[in-house]
Image (cartoon, rainbow, N blue to C red; front, side, top):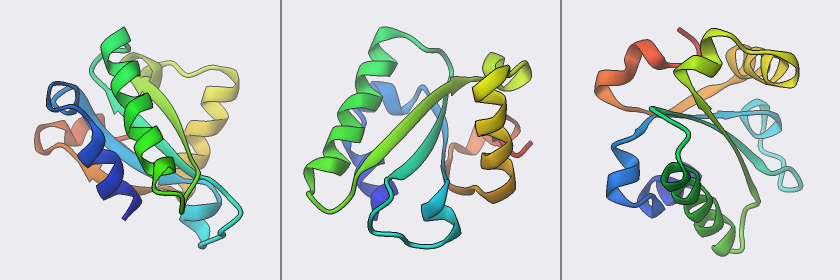
Length: 113
């Protein structure tokens, strides 16, 4: 349901820029109503438009009043050479993450690839 809300709220021109959306963290391990839904969003580029679209979609999920959401926006470049906190986040995402949506032509861009 969270993925559907998130993806439906993305403006169409932004959705074409998104390669995948992955759930990770406590909600991926088990449902915990007190934990936010951590979403890893892999996009073509980190432009102002993409960041704004992702923020709008995150707000739409939270606007339902049922769930808190926290998004991390990354690009293929980030996946290729992660550092520090992003590296740890990506390791957690690979270990426990669940792909909620992957664009058909983006299979090689998936964080687990």
